Length: 137
Image (cartoon, rainbow, N blue to C red):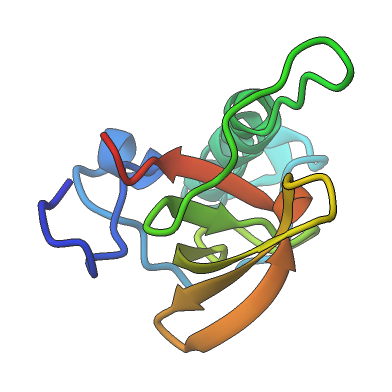
């Protein structure tokens, strides 16, 4: 969304819902509650939670596809923008990060990287990262 390499913003579900990134306070899950028991605000929160769950399950899994044993894919590169996936985190709580250091294995394939977030640096396995934008795009 920006030509600045240090900018950690990308297109999110919030851009489709309200035209800007989502900044929300975590709410209790309302997905399994019948709609006739919810207030108007809770109905909007339930819709938001359904949208987040679909985005998480359907779209993010397409970004994480690994084609094991069939073909060799592109290694992550320094400068790639990624989403740091945290299991069971509420909507809008996953961190955006930029890869700053690669840790390739003996076979020269990258399986662990060091990423820079707004809150510092951390080392993460690539299975917990969703690449959003590569550095050469």
